[in-house]
Length: 403
Image (cartoon, rainbow, N blue to C red; front, side):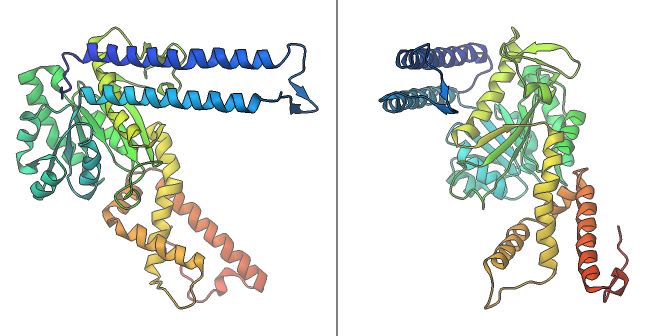
């Protein structure tokens, strides 16, 4: 099996693009033409498309459409196999800093598509061997960076330790570039649950030669114990070839594959720059691993991500922690709803308090969520007391809120 090589990345990217374009052309153009021909042959030009708000159809149209659907599905499956073949022809070497439970979890899938090297404070040599990965102790971070031709480094540590980890990593990245050239810097990927915080730290500390991909797999070892199929993977292409990308524009690439950087300059996904092509190729190969594992891929800016998760992920953890503090336990007469409450408590408490604290402290929208939750609770209590003809000052044990 050939290894991903930056020297042949440009040629590989061209071959990859050629295969996809050729396959898509063979796939879609005949499909469009044949479908158009079928519809035009079965429906006279003079006939109205709709009669009384109902589309017209001739006998046999449904069967023909089903045949066309089957043909397109077969073509799509063929393209997927070609894509998978291209992906595996030049596998990435992926380093994972933070080889704990989540790091091991993603490593198991990464090993299907490339080489994996893990590092962490604890000794996970045996586990790494079991899943087909190499292991280097974190005390030898220099060896982790220098002794392996890493194409990608995934930083899978906790939110509270993320900045220190990035700072510790930087000197070794700079040394590697000094000895092996500026293009030797791997793609740096974070998988934190808060994105603006991680993005700001990486842009602040990492050398500008390091490409950056901000990502959040919205699942983990428990929720995806049976595979990644259907689970959400959110990502932002943050920096490629020293170019800081505008996430809002990257998610709205036009038909000619043009987009704007943060300075308003128009660029193309296939710019005639070897380093740009290499960077884009590496990012797309890494993203393809998640695609091939069945993830629902959602490109989204870090800012949008944090706005959404404050009112979804954080409030879920917040409610789980609040309800857990009540000391709720199962009873002989539990309803289905209460059983769901207990499951929420169990799920949220299976994650560390550091994760919960990180969701609160490093997402600037979290306090707004807390304030709105308190206001909503006050409103509901006020309605109950009003119904009873009382005021909130008559509530037994009422205390002044700290907010």
